[in-house]
Amino acid sequence: MNTRFQVEELYKSKLTSPALAVSTLRSDSSIALGMAMSQPPSLLEALGARAEAGDIDALKVYYFHSEAFLRESLLRYSLMGRILPHCMFMGAPERELVKLGVEDENRKVVFYVPNSFSQSPRLFADHIPVDTMLVMVSPMDANGYFTFGTNNDYTTGVARAARRLIVEVNPNMPRVFGDSLLHVSEVDAIVESNHAIPELKPKAATADDKTISSLIAELVTDGACLQMGIGALPNAVSAALAGHSHLGIHTELLTPGLVDLIRRGVVDNSRKTLNRGKTVFTFAMGDREMYGYLDNNPSIESYPVSYVNDPHTISRNDNVVSVNSTIEMDLTGACNSEHVKGHQYSATGGQLDFVRGAYASRGGKSIIAFHSTAGGGKVSKIVARLSGPVTTPRTETHLVVTEYGVANLKGLSSTERANAIIRLAHPEFREALSAQARELHLL
Image (cartoon, rainbow, N blue to C red; front, side, top):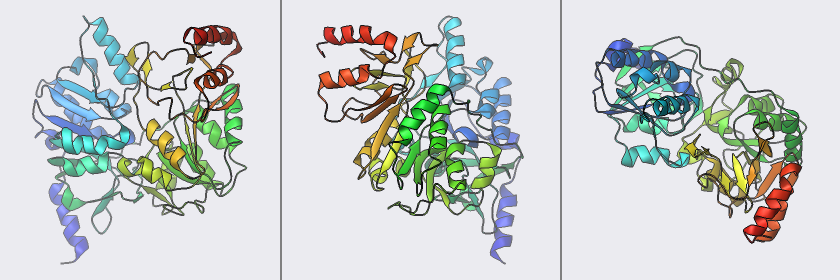
């Protein structure tokens, strides 16, 4: 009996309907979901139907970063209580659920799990027992291997740590190289679907985005290894790097802006010391064209977040340039990148991992870039004291960029830091910030 016939028979023996696949999930148990683009729509719809029918209750659901499939199935307010979202990244759906819960006699409906993204595989392995993992994967090859496609992150580890693994096979999920393989023998149940993978639609770059990105581009040398965050500003930075050469990519998130640099030949990964010649990421969010570019592309590899976001791993490449943003920065350089108005707004994510890893890299630069104001210019994002937790400590902050310039905080006294940061604030807020700095004995 040939191997191909064996794996095809094994595949068929595990193939089932979404309703049957989730019928074994029990009330008062814990499940985990793939992150973002790998959340399986057919399985989630079937599980949502069970919850709506009152057939399951108090189901703890662990996940990062919800996208449309999860929003429309399990994250409906009418299902709260039966579904207990234990999210590790707060997004718009969770914030809306929190708002509805507050309006509903201050009901608690969302349970945020503080975490460091790089440690998330260990959190599941050591601290969060998972009964069942649900995830979307790319189709099986002739040797019986699926891939995790857009999402390696914590997914690969949890898929193998869970008591039961159910996969949704989708031909639209790209087949990705690296440490992304999953054999059919490791899977307990299989369903099939043909949903389009969710697409990330970035906002158009503003004039300030373009100013900031130009300043950052001047800090990037040819041959540097890049990490970018998400949003209009990182995409504008990628566009501003079009004139560079021999860049590399080792990034938590792979985006269309970075892929465009690969297409243009700006990124060739030739000067990387680790994973030379390869673009490395742990999860990807983009458009259909980008997903097509990832499919069966041997120059692009995904690895678990415990590898990609490990500061030691990051530092093994030379000249790493990490670009991240923040919600607010205080006059010492400390960053709150996750709290707004006293509430969890997003999450710690991998910011600190890359801040530390980039600076530890030989010739590396860690950049925190942000607009100086929010709320249409009414609110300064540079403040005397943070209004939320410290995501990046003042001792770790290196280069700071706003539309008003660049400041290198390393080696500066607290007074020099305060002056440098105030110069990056919007002019309308500088006088008040200087007065506050004097009250704090910084000036």
